[in-house]
Length: 448
Ligand SMILES: NC(=O)c1ccc[n+]([C@@H]2O[C@H](COP(=O)([O-])OP(=O)(O)OC[C@H]3O[C@@H](n4cnc5c(N)ncnc54)[C@H](O)[C@@H]3O)[C@@H](O)[C@H]2O)c1
Image 1 (cartoon, protein in one colour):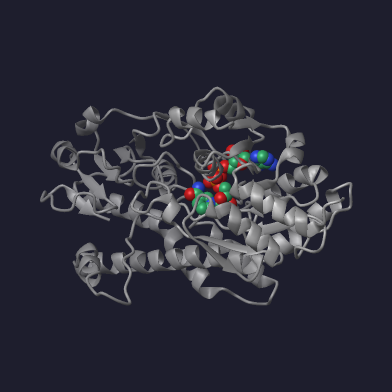
Image 2 (image 1 turned 120 degrees about the vertical axis):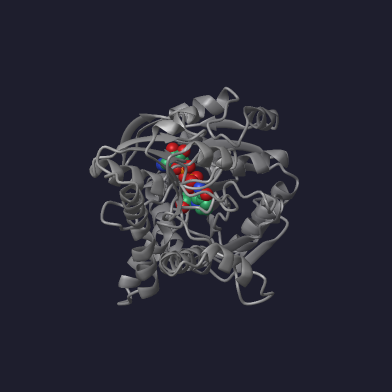
């Protein structure tokens, strides 16, 4: 007797609960690889898909290319059947496919969904009845329903449609945003609730069943668009609040008030206040980029997202503010920036991680070089730095024992392995953009 759609849905639910479901994760980057490892720990047999053959080879050889993931974790996952591949044909064998590919901005600061659409187009020919497809990439509200579903429906040769309940046949689609905060170990990944919005309640329920195997709690919202918007709200909230403290920092420096002291005091209020900290500018794959996804979509509705634009303006100005401070600090010592030797500490966009995407360090180095400074850097996470989409540094990390030779040391990323007391004692001048030298009293420190 042929299985009905309801039977197939129940069968998938059971395969998930008994860990027999095959899960494919597309995009073995900062989001996809840790997710694959979490499922592997739960004894799921995971297939990682990536178009980057170096990543595929490295994973299949039991190696890792992300600093905080040791090779031993990949090897342990291999014992649960983890393999990596660039062959989309294997999608056909998957019960669940989770998409974790990049969603950057193009040169006009508009959403670049080409990785998502490329992935969906590659999956579509291999779709099968009852398969569950989940998008995790951060994106504007409407992407799942308006772009992913139509591409899947148009691209599968069997003519399958999205199934919006357990009775209709077809495939299931949901959106569930990634909420990881790299380098932040204060909350175990399992304890971060997972928001899920499905194209129909059955899809949402199936996706929730998948995530409940690795997360303690799932939060169901009524649609993929609500889940997409949830992720953007979280990131815009950070972006706007960081812009606020970045602006206040500039004012406080003029008023000779220590904003960090003020934030610590404000933080003692038991309600209604959350601490955000100023810095040299925004970095990373999310906070500088995601708000623009919403601004772009808002235009379709004749709406200007003024808060987002203002926050973007303040945050984008921070590297310039830092450079102005360096120029001023050098001039106080009778030196011009042109020809001065500057050592930038930290390339990563934040403390203790090996990710330099959108890092303010890159902008600061570029601005300093354009103004004629002789710039070097040190970062324990990047022994060398070559060329990226938006920079061409081709530099090597300089040893810290050369600090006395520099006219100015600029702390851009406050990695915890730096000995700030020692740095200050050997430097001619320190410009500190992160309050890394708090508690150190010395004439050669300039807070920026
Ligand atoms: N990194 C984070 O901390 C973080 C946090 C929350 C959300 N996100 C979001 O998650 C998504 C992924 O980010 P990431 O940091 O993991 O990106 P990443 O660049 O580290 O990894 C993406 C991977 O996808 C691969 N890829 C690209 N196109 C592909 C295709 N067509 N088929 C198969 N593989 C393909 C790339 O080779 C790369 O390995 C983005 O939307 C991002 O905004 C990231």
